[in-house]
Length: 391
Image (cartoon, rainbow, N blue to C red; front, side, top):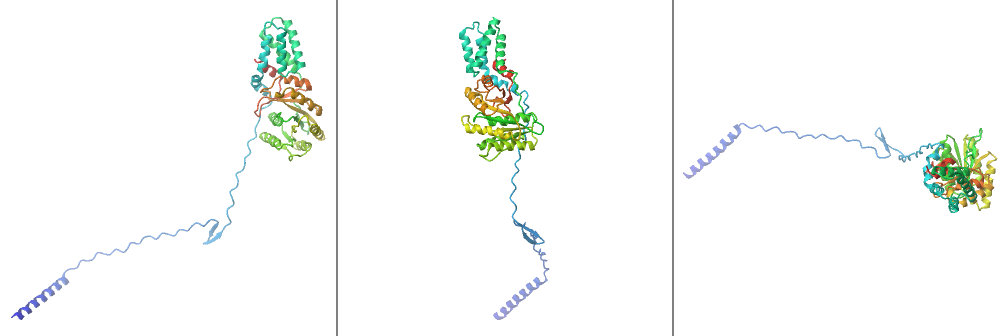
């Protein structure tokens, strides 16, 4: 009996398993969701690399180029040429500078002459004032004697009369009738030649450069000659002055023969049809006889080519009577035709204008009234005296 039940259980289990399998087979199947294909990322295009420095590609080939040239240096642009003011009216424009430095002399003399009583002591003081102003002994004596005579004739004196008396005497000694013309006019095809001489330290090279500005301002074409060959700085300085106003400078090597440089400057001036050639010479000491002889040689060599129209002696107005001795020595070597007084706006004594003209017998033609490039002015006797006396 038991074996019979076991068989029945086994059969039942097998039937259940068969029914379960049949159920699974007959059940409707779910469709599997479609499988998305994997995303395809865009492949970046390969960019062509730029050629390396010094390479060039053409049709896929690489060509090696020579290294690039270094950058060109920037061009040096010359400064614009300056146009200086004309010479006319320069001293009037600079009159205030002169008045500031010289008015002490004028005020002192006017105060003394305005005293109620002019005894010998007062006249001695007037004489002392004039002498210390570098007027010189002989001119001072003339001025004092004339003033004493005129005061006696006048009797009473108003301030205006005193000023007029002193102005008259100072002008008489300076002599406004002297010919102060600068001889810088061209002679046909030949330029005028100006020789500038003087002792070291008087401002000779600077005066030469400023004179070039004066002439260019008056519409003249100028050539400069750097015949001071013993100082390279002098030639450099003169060339700088010339470049600022468009004037060429003829120079030689350091230590070259000054006479040769001066001759070349005049020759080139003739070739280029300039109006005026200005030759700067060495600032030779007046005690050096050999150097003074050389100055004479410079003048003689120039005259083989052209006439020397002006010989300007540059004097430092602050040197007083020492300047007088210098002037006399130079006058013995070359024929001085005019004086250029520098530093007249500083500590100079204005009376040197009177004494230097009296000693040399030549007029003061130019005066330096400052350190600016256009502070050189043609001398005007009346403007000078009025500046000393004040308004």
